[in-house]
Image 1 (cartoon, one colour):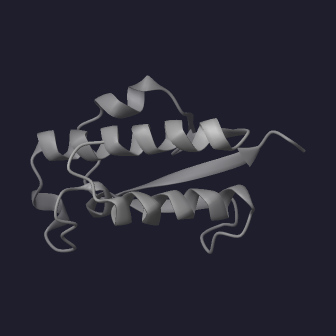
Image 2 (image 1 turned 90 degrees about the vertical axis):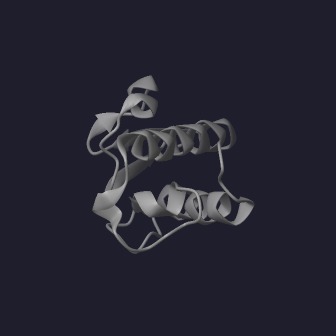
Length: 107
C-alpha cells in the first residue's frame, strides 16, 4: 500500500470486518468504501477532481487491504457485484465509492 497511513488502513479494514460479521450499517454484509479514505492525505472534498493515477492508487490500496483481509477471514468478496480479483488494482475510475460484499465461507 502506497502513501496510506495505518489509521486509514485500519479504518477501511474495520469496515470489512463488520461486513464479515453482518454488522455493517450499510446492508449488513456490505461495506461502503469511499475512495478518499484510500488516498494520500485523506481529503474529503473535491472527490471528482482526482487524477486517474490517484484513483488507480486508491484501487490498488483497496486491493491490497482486501488481500490481507482474505488471509485472515475465510470469505468471498464481491466489489459492485463482481468477484474480487486482480482487475480491481487496475481500475482508474475509483473516484467516489464502491460497495464491498463479504460472504463468510465458514457457514
